[in-house]
Image (cartoon, rainbow, N blue to C red; front, side, top):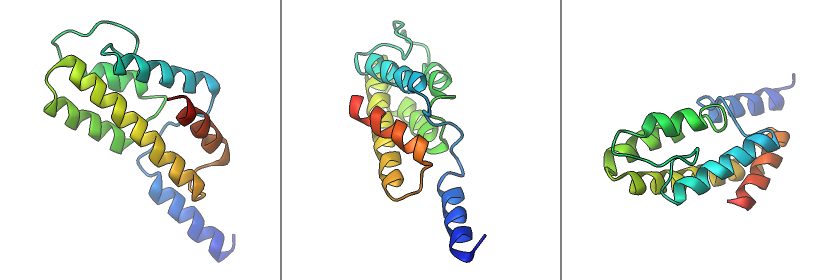
Length: 128
């Protein structure tokens, strides 16, 4: 591997050090779209009706294998501390996830995302 390739590989590894799942299939993208839309309507990602108990686990477990990223999950934990009402928390999570996807699309434009993942993110971003 030449010097430039090694540097590029190191940069990509640093950018995605805390990322373990991206929506690299249409099915995963559709599940994200469904979950985000449900949350923006004040429902749980799976469409269930929220109650007063903590919903962080529900949101994180739904998205864990779809859009797994340390920064996103830190944001979700922070939102749970700021928003005590279920609908407000879920709406804030939907906004955070959309923002996170936009950030990934931007990184993809800069060549920091695998081309297959970038294509999926572009399609996903256009549907949210």
